[in-house]
Amino acid sequence: MKDTILISLLIWIIVINAGKVWPTSRGERYYRNLQKWYLLANNGEWEKAKKIENKLKSGDIDNFKKGNEKEELEKRFQILDSRGQKNADDWMEIAVLYYRLGKKDEAFKAITKAHNLDPIREDISKIYFTYQTSQQLPRLP
Image 1 (cartoon, one colour):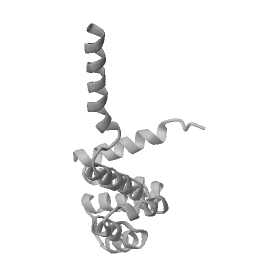
Image 2 (spheres, rainbow, N blue to C red):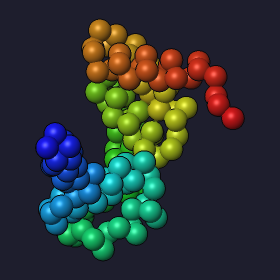
Image 3 (cartoon, helix red, strand yellow):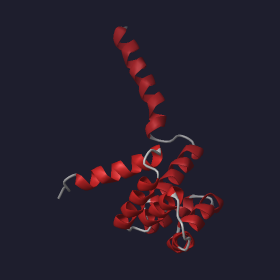
């Protein structure tokens, strides 16, 4: 009797948690694919992202693509770069644009300028010190 109850309980636990591992609804699968696409696009892995685009609605990705493709990032960078006097927000945005364009050294220089202009601002300090610390860590082979 105890064995039957224990086995039944284990089966229920497995069934309940199976939905967390394997999405059971179409909406959950769609959401996971969309989040995977966002992650790939944010990392600049556009070729991999394009492979799962056919599983997504074009409206969900068009705005993100328009604002984050290389050409658009470069246009936004040119607008910011042409400004004479830049404040901490400008340097912060320039750092993000450099990072997304794959220019990590320039991104650190820009976040350093933002940090120098506003050293007590928490969001800038977090990024500045995180990046600074990561540069001092030994690289794994």
